[in-house]
Image 1 (cartoon, rainbow, N blue to C red):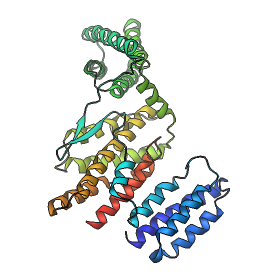
Image 2 (tube, helix red, strand yellow; image 1 turned 120 degrees about the vertical axis):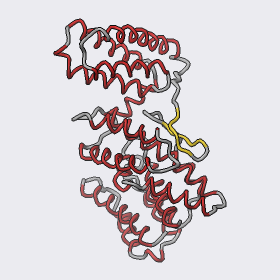
Image 3 (cartoon, one colour; image 1 turned 180 degrees about the horizontal axis):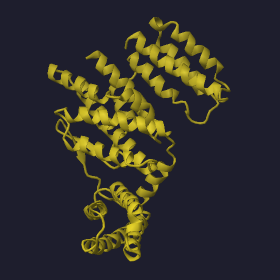
Image 4 (cartoon, rainbow, N blue to C red; image 1 turned 60 degrees about the vertical axis):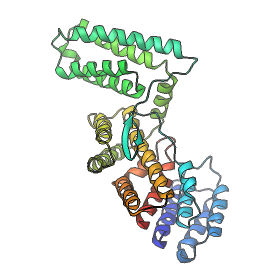
Amino acid sequence: MKPDRLGNILEEMEARLTRAQRDGNGRGLAALTVAVRRYRAKLDKLSASDISELERLIAQVPMQGDPLRLNNLIAGLKIGLNQLSLDDIIDATPGQKLAAFQFGFEGELLKVIDQPIKPYESEKDIAMASLEAAIQNGAYVNEDLKATNVSPRVREAFARLQATMSSYTNIVQIGAGAQICSRYLQMEVEELSPSLAGMLVGHIESVFAALSQFKDWRVYCENAYELHLEPGSIKELTENASLLIKDLRENNVIDAAVPNALETVVGWVEEQAQPDKRDVLSLGRTLENIWSAMVKQIVSFAKETASETRKLAIKAAAATLLIGAVSLVPIISKIPGAQWIEVAYIYVKSIRDKQ
């Protein structure tokens, strides 16, 4: 990695330390800050022992965990000095997480993959019975809607929810579908008869009651409520995701369903003035899953004896991931459990620069 890349990582480390000190959380950071500044001044001579010294100082910081995510930057420095192997990168990159969409490669084509609903054994009977009851009720509701004057938007939303439930392939999409039905219903409830509105509200409540029986959905909601993104960050996330969608559509190793999936979750967020945190998590996790699948593919290619064709494929994949990444990655890394993406980002940049 070029010295200026190492300098950028150290600059980011110093910026995080400076912010922490400015915010009154700088206890025990003085020695680390001095060391970072010293190493920024000697980039051409930065060595493995220098990085080890930074690791030692970080370990002495009196903070629970790694709230400044300094260890991710240390990993970036190790990549720059070729201290982090490709296997280390793979180990640091998680598999597909529960999200609105998951992805995987079939051969060399990235595709959307199903997420069959898999309740835990202890909850299986009650959870599946609750879902079956919601599906049966949904069939009656959708049949009744055909004879009403509800808007096409509401009718289509309830039909999509029913189809998603009946497919048993994605619990997050069921939740998102119920949220959409709820939003549309609130917009038009004054135009509906009390009996019709009551029927639709009751159905939505039955769907959420069924979802609450699944631990995966409960944990997903907990993760969403732990997510704290400013409105500006959410707007930046959707804007840069839209840029990525355009590039994904032009990439011949990306199935058309992939950008369509990303476009779907962007739409869920954009249609709300104050987005539901679960929809924001759906967008963030979908982006995280795209990164996970593609980083693993890039690394697997890089581990092979690279032909010119492979080198071009690696470079193209890296270029695609880096669309808007300078803005996307810092935001995605704030999602619980997504801090790994900072290391992946540094690695992908280094791969692109080498090719």
